[in-house]
Length: 636
Image (tube, rainbow, N blue to C red; front, side):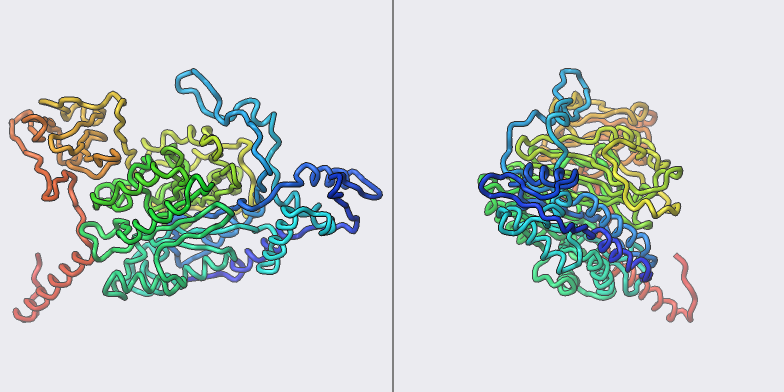
């Protein structure tokens, strides 16, 4: 793995330059008795600083944080783009600084524009920006605070200076106070070569640790499905998992970490690959982790003021993140615990019953933040899709990272664009995607960005990378000096699936399905869903018959694909007990039987270790026959 020295050192340079603070010899005094500001030889700069300190005297950073969330890492031989992504993130953190929390929460107008017009775009009210100053940032307070004698500062101001000093001593950066990083896993090479550095090998863990360490930020991580794929090195999932934990100094594969007075990060890891009943790439959290997670949530209650952010490699069922890939749907590895009917709905049930869970971040799909459904809301929880940073990992030509910024009453969700999506104006941008008001439970989204990308679902293989050209005031330039053109030649060969999620009042539900439901002529346009007699939920969408989870109505898998339908009619008979396919020309009939476990969706992909063992046995048998027949090669 190449690590250019120039790239490796660039983070140090950017950190050092970002932390430079001008210290004036002139001293400004805050009087604790009268809260008046006194200074000698006032000039305009002094007056501005004094006014700033007076206005924000009681602001604190008890629950202020910045959080970098990285999706599927997939290290590559040429790591230059990964290190460019690191420098983009550090520059963004420097630009954003922290959001100190105000001492109280005065009444504010609603975040959302109240409109009775159907389909009206939600956005900030006209009075919101006018009546409220832009949020103060820590970098604006540090300079003036350093000019004030310690005896004249209150506790909140002393804490800010103490935290700044601790961070500066640790990494020579005062701009990264209360900044953290979370990796969502899938660390090693995406292409398997059966050598060190492949996904799931010890070398891939060591390489990833070197990369994550280079951020000089406290970090934690969870496993992805590929992190247990070290089949050539480890015989069991437990051995593979223990090697991962040993590399990162962990005793368990899950984590909880407090990053503020009432903010908790919680990570859950997938723990099986070889032992998966179907697709090895299903992300599966075991019962022990689930019980631990539910206990952590109970012990950090909403009533006590906690807010919890959860991190898993794959999203959970019921999250309403709708844009996924056909391969994940077909193979049963789109959601956490996809194939486990007993546990897959426990995640969303916990979310719905726990208002302290405010955010849930996931990756796995290798798709961008630019789809309308890359952010979704269920009750008080915002579900966040996270993209990738590697050239070989992207499936839609974008390379992106999330930055979550917040204090005790607001959360800001940003995208750091690492790719060059505008060849005429070559620069990265830091884009604000959403604001969440924790007190009101409301979210404002950058609808302009989402609206520019509504056609992505219908243009799977023709993404021209210009959909993101959104030059509104929420975009901030970072690293404009990097001005080379990036050519991404990774083909988009695996179209994503704009998953339809049934709703009770969507007009597509069939109350009593009987007879012909759809035919080949209208199959592409047909959208409907119904309950079978046994309680299973089936539907027609995208020219296929799909099964949905009966609890969350999330798509489980394909029952009959477009090719298998082959213009046949779909009929429901015998009081919704039987699905049949009929050829209208020959009247030939095929019954769609449920699986042994009662489900209907087809488990096309079997466990990878089992398939490898079968292939090895077949090869051994072939070699034996060749030797028996005098080295005559048999062809099958």
